[in-house]
Figure 1 (cartoon, rainbow, N blue to C red):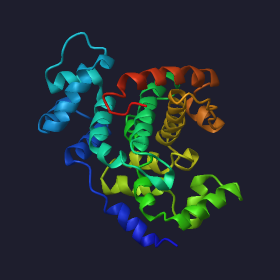
Figure 2 (cartoon, rainbow, N blue to C red):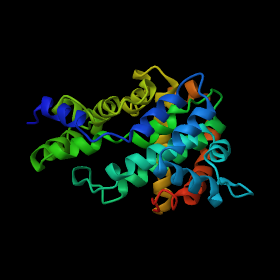
Figure 3 (cartoon, one colour):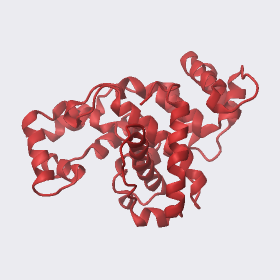
Figure 4 (cartoon, rainbow, N blue to C red):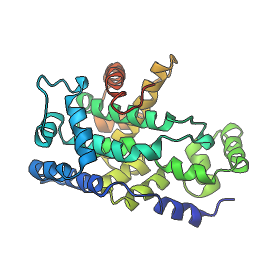
Length: 282
């Protein structure tokens, strides 16, 4: 079986996000975030500046005039979308590969990450509670633990996990925990900690399947973003996927079933707009 210490060490040794992205995540999650300082940080990172300006000037941004400065781009997009673009730029190389252990072809994990992040953009308009900006980052990275987990899942262990699912009726997450002592959400949280991302991002990643265990609206919103992200992908694949959301999550977020049904086509349309920007077309 898997050596749990080696698994955790591998999570802690994953290459870091760019320092500017980590610093940006910390600034955006601060209660006294200064737009001028955010703009200055981005301006000193050429790659991040280019990504931000492309995002601000894309058709999906809805701007009437061309944006030419970082400060204008930050003002147009808002901090949450700025952070989402930054994290997406830094994380994409990690999330674009093929993961055979999860039956994910090349680009599939990245596409799901973008679909979930797009859902996180749309969700606030349908909830009664305020959705923190950390949700966008957690939504993009919620499955990052699969990167490390997949390195250790040989055919024998995969067989054990599938039997636990098919014979014992365990969900994939519970099967991982039972057989390996840790699940991909917990590994993802370790990676986010290694990257020095804010605590609420870490919590959202760890608890994106069981948000009630996190006790934070970030966990509920990340969970919902994952569910809606799956629904978006199903729509583009021509599949009919029932939208099943835990009632406790709906109550805590203040979102009705009618709102859930309304937000999905909006999120799908938004994904169609931004997928080319993220190179995540379905």
